[in-house]
Amino acid sequence: MSEKPEARGPAAVPRQAAAPAAGTASGRDGPAAADPIRVLIVDDHALFRRGLEMVLQDEPDIEVVGEGGDGHEAVEMAGELIPDIVLMDVRMPRRSGIEACTAIKDVAPSAKIVMLTISDEEEDLFEAIKAGASGYLLKEISIDEVPQAVRAVHGGQSLISPSMASKLITEFAALARRSEERTQQVPAPRLTDREMEVLRLVARGLGNREIARELFISENTVKNHVRNILEKLQLHSRMEAVVYAVREKLLEIT
Image (cartoon, rainbow, N blue to C red; front, side, top):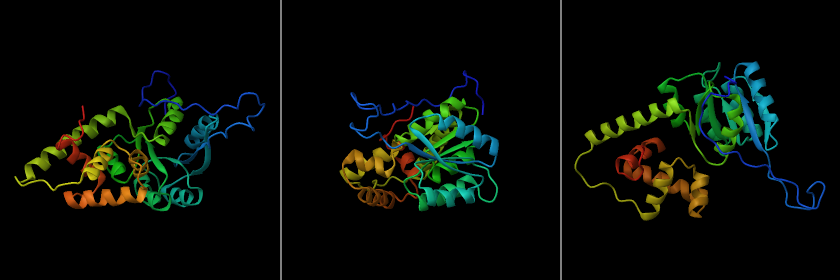
């Protein structure tokens, strides 16, 4: 990871830490401060983990709750600690970050996973997204950008390093073209108005919890809508749903 100030990475807006209430020394009589963002760091390089921990621990609204050295430890610790964010490498011993990503979603569904890696392979990017990662950042980003990335993903954004995002968009276009070539001239399955709303939000990269808040419905209801959408459209993943939304001009990628 470079610490050069000119390194460019995905934009993220820092969230201001809660300040003590006016008129009190500690804010004890005012509104309670927001809980810190709980972060689990997983990387097979101890020095890199230590560097990340030092940077994040300086942030008043971020707390490093644990460190792991491989994908197996990542799953165990995520189940025990229930972190808000998991910063994890892709290629690690015993169990890869991508394999761990899928398992973490089972043991800690609320955790959002950001791959922080040197791998710029398209296949790793696509597999990470399909496994449920909310971000894919290359270690070339400035170390000062990591806290911003943590806040952004915790706030509901999906982050991808610019060089990798262009590869993802190219793949979306290719998938859309192949899908159009296979599609016969038959009426598309009809989705309800609510399912269309959910599909548009899925295409924007929102998770089930964010969609539930957006539409004022329960998270279980969102899960049911997503399952119905995939069944009606004969799709197998949220990624394919995004491609469908692009093809049907429900979402424009520029």
